[in-house]
Image (cartoon, rainbow, N blue to C red; front, top):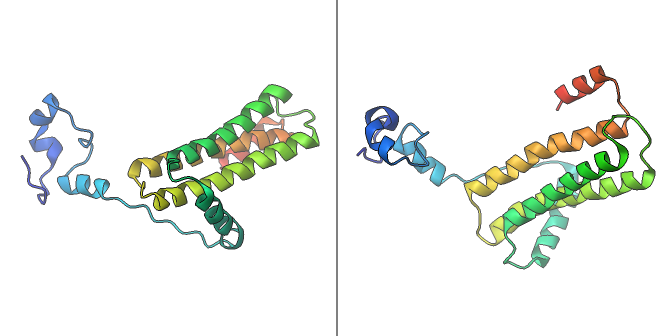
Length: 176
């Protein structure tokens, strides 16, 4: 077996040992890479004015009202559900074409769902730190949902703007 501070590649020299009992870490090249992944801590920063004066203070107050037994990944999933709900409602109620009238009250409802997603996205990391439930899996889940939310937010906006020209849609989707 390779020592933990060795730079010897695991996949080349120990391939036979790993073929019989695969590990979830076999895609790393050295044991140092495995140790880094296990000890990884996400660190991000937002210097925006709305974050500093609105989203962060409101999210902190809301998280302090949550019970500690609520898992941060549940908060992430609830935000993801808000976006999925807005997406499904938009295209099931008003058709799949990027044209046609959408009433003003639905735009307000969709905006409320986006606001709920944004607040829940702020709250999940704060709840994870508050309850000491930070993990690489939670970070991956948060970034995964943010990635898919970008697409699922863009398509209804194209419908609301009534961009039915395929070239305009393609250009705007390239900008994401």
